[in-house]
Image (cartoon, rainbow, N blue to C red; front, side, top):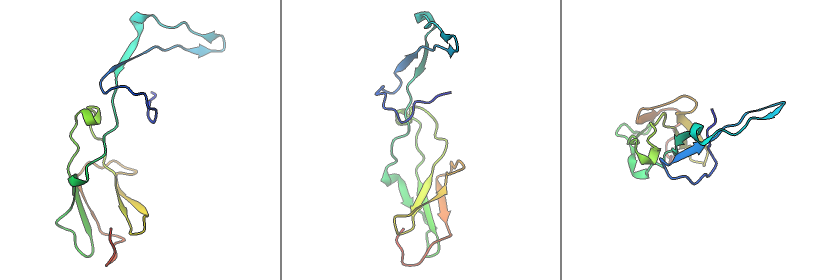
Length: 125
């Protein structure tokens, strides 16, 4: 399966995209399919950027841990009506060095996380 990602096709969300497939071998290309055998799919989109207002300092934050909570993303036109498969949380170690905490490389669907390692007093994260 091929996904057209990173390519700006400028299709509106949910617009039906018609496709035709031809095959190639050492003898040449097959004929193009007829209009009646054209395939179609609805355009989807990657989720939009999460709003910073949905990300909160959790109540369990202390001098030795950071607790982060966020609102789950609602499946709607902003997600192309596709379910969210994972959240990926990174944090800045105070020097513009971003570290992945959850969601990379394995999926993470909870809407909170507590960071307990690598935390230093007096550093902004």
